[in-house]
Image (cartoon, rainbow, N blue to C red; front, side, top):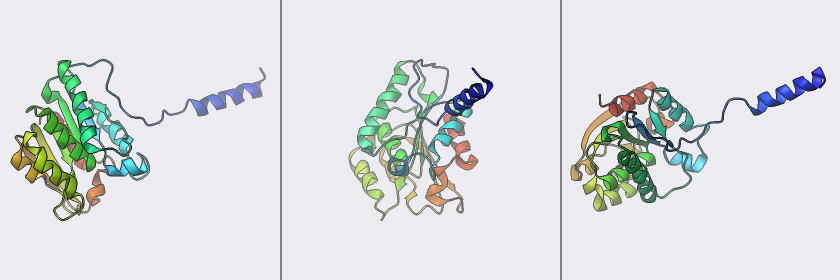
Length: 221
C-alpha cells in the first residue's frame, strides 16, 4: 500500500468512525437495583420536528447521564399519550420487578411528555415513585387544556407518587397541575421559575435552572 493510499484510507476511517451520533436510551439489559433511573420524555415539538435544532433532546439525555443516572428516553414519533403512558408504565414496572426501589425511579417530562408522565402515574398508582412535570399541564382557556381536562375527569383519581411541578412564569401554554393533584393521591410541590428564560421553550435545551431541580428531586433532596 502506498503512503498516499494509506492516508486516504485513514481519513475515510476517521470520517466513518467519528463522534457517535446522538441516540435514544433504551432500557438497560442488566438492571442494577442500586442505581437511580430517570425516564425523560420530550414535548410535542420533537414528535413533529425531530430531536435536533431547536429542541436539544439528546443533549438533555446526555446531561442527565453525566450526572450519574441511568437515563431512559427516546425521540417519539406522533403518539397517543394514553397508549404511550401504558408502555412507559410497563417499563417502570419492569424496574420494580427487578428490585429497584420506587424512590430510585423518576419519571420526568416536558409539555406533552409531562402529561404522559401524569398518565403513567395514574396507571401505576404507586406512592413512592418520583415524578417531575415541566410545563405539562395546559392553562385554562387554551387548546392544550383539552387532553388534561379529559384525564382529570376520567383517570386523575389514581395518580400517586411524589411530584415536582415546575413551569415558567411567562409560559402562556402551561401552568400548575393543581386540578390533577386535588383529585389524586400524590404529594406534590410547585415551583414557579422566573420569566425571561424562554417561557415554554425554557425546557427545549439543558439548563442548570431546571436540571438541578430534576436531579435534586430524583435524589429525594
